[in-house]
Image 1 (cartoon, helix red, strand yellow):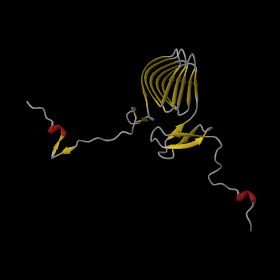
Image 2 (cartoon, rainbow, N blue to C red; image 1 turned 90 degrees about the horizontal axis):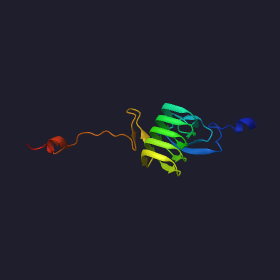
Image 3 (spheres, helix red, strand yellow; image 1 turned 45 degrees about the vertical axis):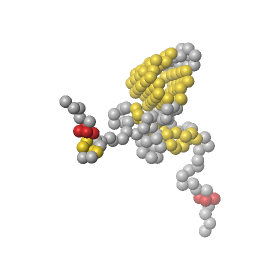
Image 4 (cartoon, rainbow, N blue to C red; image 1 turned 90 degrees about the vertical axis):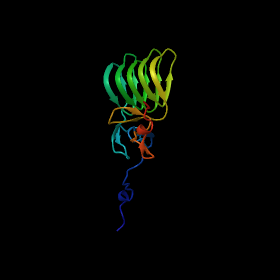
Length: 174
């Protein structure tokens, strides 16, 4: 008995989306593709949930904000605290620790203070920047300590060289 046409076209994984974007997990740095319309997904490597919703902030927000989407900070918008996002476009005020896995764009008359770790940075003429800015590869966020590093945390131990530890070898004389 032949298969019906509807069953012959069955795709166990479903059709691939037409518009995709490449993202990377902030926890394990695994890169993968998702649909442009996706709002949340789990990382295929470490299975942690990731939110990709875009935020438009036009008022004062205090505390921690975390999304892998784009954060738009309006003229009257103010972000005080820790911000982790995929991209940041600011025309308002940002104060605190900011980790951006993409680009940062500061419009004219915007104010940024605190610490910034991003992949790229662009400030329009008239923007005020009073931040410790670090531009480089994608930062990783350590969930255990809440600190930001540029590579995974590694254990360091005491090295024993010639039967002695480094502390014993370089003991002050006196």
